[in-house]
Amino acid sequence: MQAQLTHLQTQALTAINASDSLEQIEQLRVRYLGKKGELSAVLGGMGKLAAAERPLVGAMANTVKEQIESALQQQRTHLETQAIQAQLAREAVDVTMPGRFVPQGHRHPMQQTIDRVTDFFIGLGFSQADGPHVETDYYNFEALNFPPDHPAQDMHDTLYLADKRLLRTHTSSVQIRYMETHDPPVRIVVPGGRVYRKDALDATHSPNFHQIEILAVDDRITLADLKGILVLTIEELLGKRPMRFRPSYFPFTEPSVEVDIWWEAPGKPGRWMEVLGAGMVHPNVLKHVGYDPEQVQGFAAGLGVERLTMLLYGIDDIRLLYTSEKRFLAQF
Ligand code: FA5
View: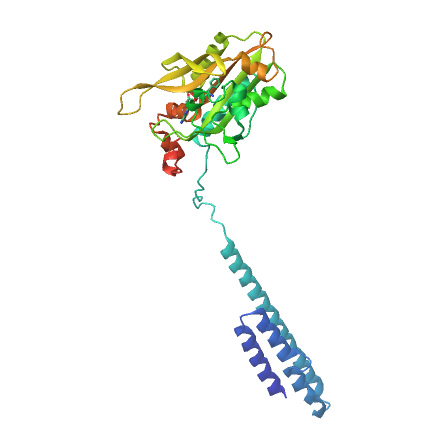
């Protein structure tokens, strides 16, 4: 029986030392030390021993049991440590590794122009206003003093919708919507409104472009205020540039002006580029919204966002502003 115990111990210790998982260790514990395990099976034969032999064999069985238990515990600790080491190695962070480059977006060059001009006017005490892109003839033309079927409407080749509504041809429609619902004094900036015309696409025209509308109405506003503010706006955005005011015509302003800025695209002869239309609000427009033209006057302007952006960044073709070409946009 002692030989059996010795054999059992050797076999158990060899198996335990060779085990490589915690489940395997548990299986070995059950196999050798469990109630129906091998040690119990050997000890089952104790009854047949002589009384004098029993304490000896009993003491030996205890030693074998302790040895196996201690081997199990050691191997368990060993495997657990190994597992932790492996996990630490797996999850280690190399703080010296270079970071991964995450490309960052930025505002479109046109949005930058819109934001800068809008901020400038907010700084002067103007409020922001906006209006719908789908307009009625009333807001886009009639209330702005375009006589019905007047050739002036041809200035804006209009895109009509099936229900007689239209896509606004300029942001001046917002002037009417705002004045209808607000008493004077009025000071508004309409930031970067999209407008639509049946214009052919070329280097400086697009059928779908953006305007910033400015409107101020108060009791002592003059053309000098308009001129001063337009010069300041251009200087703020583009710095000092050759610039000229030209007399012009809009049904909703009298007098009316247009502003041109000298433009030199690389490799092309320089020329004047028209960037905005403006003027003193026509008395008929004031009457349409219920203001008294004897009491208040105003100025208004519509700035072309695309053209200002082209001048700001030296872009020689409007079409470039509508591409989603990342290499182009990343330059601004
Ligand atoms: C108007 O749209 C008037 N509503 C401006 C105005 C507002 C006058 C308030 C008086 C008072 P015009 O059609 O000229 O005006 O357009 C104004 C500006 O928009 C132009 O100076 C130009 O910079 C820009 N623009 C006009 N048509 C196009 C186009 N097809 N593509 C790109 N920009 C354009």
